[in-house]
Length: 277
Image 1 (cartoon, helix red, strand yellow):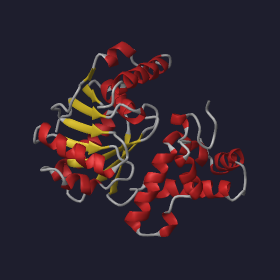
Image 2 (tube, rainbow, N blue to C red):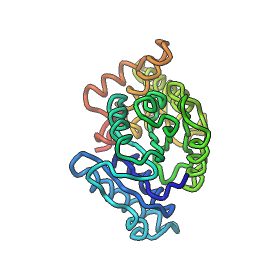
Image 3 (cartoon, one colour):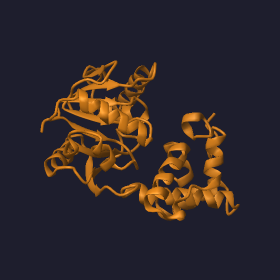
Image 4 (cartoon, rainbow, N blue to C red):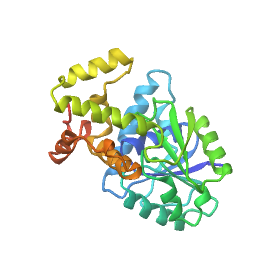
């Protein structure tokens, strides 16, 4: 399989980062987002990121941006990488639509951090060509791509996507399609327990994060990381884990739910566990 023309759907933080690294690899990228102004904001974020990387020896921003083309609708490509909202119904609707637009040999990939890839594959006529490509934020910096095989994913598709990840300068690690895959099956209970420690008054947020950073050699504490991910996304992933695994230990911390209800979603809203105003 050759992925020379890639459609990225979703121009938010993750989608823009994915579009950037794919274009930087020399491929043509089509960037689509139905929300007004989203693609323009995404391209602006990409330019800012490229300018920072250029100062450290990265490629010229204009050279990469020349390979990025905004599109108003789903467009034929060799590969689609979906990076929209973490909602199963929305993703399934997109995969149905993409299945009707992209050529039969194209691969449909999702950047989901928790939605079952098997369910996305099942709504298409090409389930063997559906796979998960879970990038990590910030995409241009972090090396890992978690490659998730649906029950139906073919060996050929998995091998091609692993090869693509390596071409992008990433390190692929394969996982099977279970709730939360590997990364969030481990990470989200860690974040959730940190929220419980804050809620129960075990320590203040800064102390919790300092203990995690210095005690576990983590570059970022769990509460600051939750703010970076988005507290609404953390709650959504915990709900997928709780529903998919049937274990109440995965229930989102009430404090997380309260913050989300108050609109304190983390960095993207200006306030979460920390104030970014």
